Length: 486
Image (cartoon, rainbow, N blue to C red; front, top):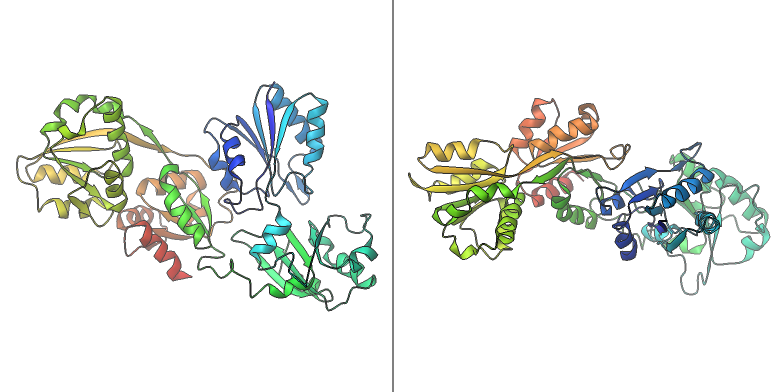
């Protein structure tokens, strides 16, 4: 018998998830997630974890609640560690209690991992504090999904004071405002609707009970939205920290490997962007290929790295084989600052560093050092561009290429993950080719496209994709290009 974790994933911002949730997701062998849980959290799963989408979109339920309950039971009885990922918190209008009761009936062990709930976090991102001294000393949360049928004491709600918050109630916005006014609440009471809060598609409309429905419909808001009524709404502009970030409203797709994506993902999130991570490339390491060269390492004049992956594979082999790096007398060369940083992390300072992330730039640096007869070791990808090895040989050098890894096609985290993307960032020709295979060239043409450099740009041009190229071929160059447009 397996076990089930009912996990609250927060309101949509992929970083609003708890440390415990991340730790348990890494242990899961099967996961069921809904549409309000951002797909970014799927990055924490192991590659062999089975993933099931059971979202409930208005008018289109992929799974009924009974089907979800049955599936939880079935997966647990198969011996899986099941993660039931729910937007917000499992027990706040999330039907987590129903799922837990079914598991108890079946004798299945479970735990609940609380999540950051949307009534508080979404309004926070909209500049609206749910409580404020002398203005709102409490708050009340209601489900607005079936406002006309719910057994809400509207007289009490209208006169209780504090902040009123309605979840899942956009379709009944008019009913909610009407009921509150009919029961004595002033029609001029501040009211706001925040749609898709904490994401790049967050949109907010502010008004009063009297005109909020008209304003929200005019602004083309829709579900999922949160309705808030009360004097705290007046702070929505002054405390509006999130919507003032330079990349707010931008959904940026990064296409690198999982290992390479972390740095740029975190920088983009800090600037207000929502990041859709599609690891179009997966790295298949083959460090054992170095077995044919390990006895020659102390004879090379230069060891040249053209990627972080090459650095990782090279030093992993040395470590696994107890090789003392002090035997190596070669000068180290690196392409770009990221590769330089990876080499320095091993306690070695590269002498030759290309400023731009292209082989041509690296050779321009190396030609000031190399001479005919030099021995060069080049640990790199199996499907790398031949340019560097060829031009070094043309200059009289002996070049040993060692294919310590290869890039293979990645996978989509979900079928619809590319739909909301505004801008796609490509960092190599292989990311271009792989993304075309994953999402199609026509889908990419509908987005703003940024190329890290001209080599990647050539791959885009061959496919008829319009693109912008960065002034600096680095992560910082990409970020500057994104900010310039905004």
